Length: 460
Image 1 (cartoon, rainbow, N blue to C red):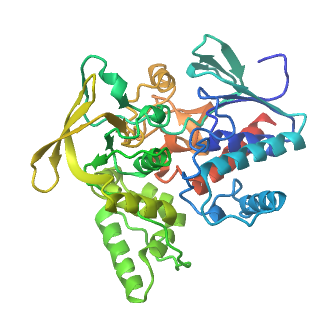
Image 2: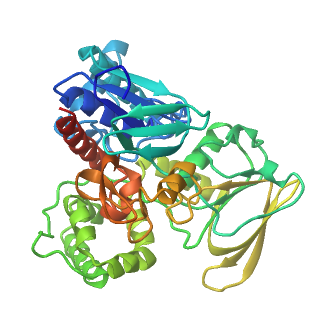
Image 3: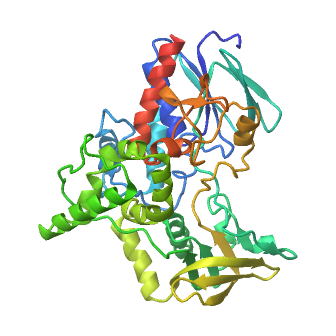
């Protein structure tokens, strides 16, 4: 413990999860608290996702569902209305920029700290590389060698950088034409007329294409993924009555798939869009996942996941329209196929792809390669030093699918021996294997409130 007698919490991660956990800790604690928040990108209050300055990077969820507080669903809308009144402008549409949402999160944190001046939050611009957990405290060590002691630690580390399906062969200066992580790489290095190859056709690909287009990029872009699926657009749909109840949740992936298809067909016969049907499943998604045996969860990941993600994680209509316009103009080509090889050279990149359907091998050449394949999910292979340290010191273990960290009650990390920690917690994307749907704001804000309630209760 430090000389400061206030309960001290360590939060690893400066994005939405870390920010709102800090807010709830301060607001719920019966005594003043001290928070140390660590973020290697120094993106405190917004994280990488909501720090983008590009106004074309819109939220993928309507503003009505993006309140930082689960118990105050209109909190974000009222903040937007206040901004519009100050600027003398009309309220914004249903999808606003992620950069604006980052301003909202920082404003929420600032208001919280102003209302509770006896509590404090210190942002530490450093990467946590290891930690040592005792019975009642935790020591965190950062990459610069500094050590910090706190009472409890919450891992809010978000998603990890993507990994290519195959290891690239790199020639002399080949890395100069490869952007391994588009969120930390400098896309401005790509010339306006350069040919670009993107691995992945999901949400990250959409962001990269929009970013390049907004910079005046004129060259051709080829996006490749195994199935060639792209995120589908949102549409305005009304509420749909829940068709799954806790007592009738399917126990197999096949039964679940058939049940959803029947409901979509029945809804379509009555003029109801499939989006309304899928949206009605949100309250039951985590219960559905937890109710499936591990073997069925694996079956879902192997066969259903790509279809689920393109239907479930949709994009704003203006975004979808711009992407489709680029495809019609021939500036963006989407290809379905399995990546066979990648060559990185001094002047560009070359890929061999086995096309889906006819299995013909095609060579694709370009000036740049950008990895948009989505976050790395295999925690057995993630090289992040903190995660490796947790595993090496047997303080944590992967979940049964290696999608993230194993959890006990109250979001406590489970050690290699199966014991739930009293001082280490995790929430957000790292607990995907336990809950599946744990990356969107409506899911994470509930976790933040629950973890804060537990931590402040034990601190008191």
